[in-house]
Length: 130
Picture 1 (cartoon, rainbow, N blue to C red):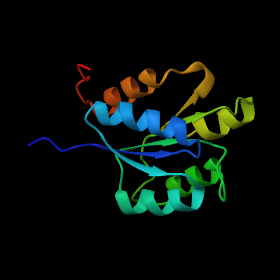
Picture 2 (cartoon, rainbow, N blue to C red):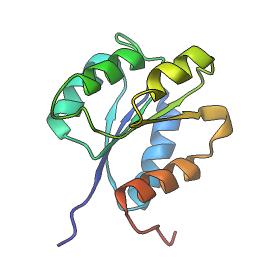
Picture 3 (cartoon, rainbow, N blue to C red):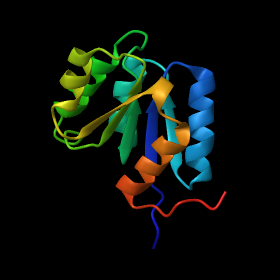
Picture 4 (cartoon, helix red, strand yellow):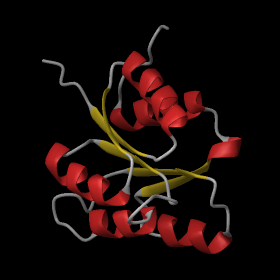
């Protein structure tokens, strides 16, 4: 039996979120949205996603704190996280990528189709024919 994989998008840019959601749902994935860090922390633990797509710059609690929360809980510590952000400083990249379970992508350099392909590969989901 096939289980639908769940992705949570943690992003406060509504047009980007909607575009990414459309592409992921078109690829057969279930998508949950959180637009601020506080909601994100709650939803990650409620939804138990298979992968997280996380922005760094978020209202209320930033993405680095959300990532720390994910890594500090037994049930989510190994959860794959794709950081998709415009924060390009070396310190931020090193800080979030050092755990080996987090991939870092710059929004300006990464087409949404690339993110979908990476998520599909990670979750071993067949590519959509759309």
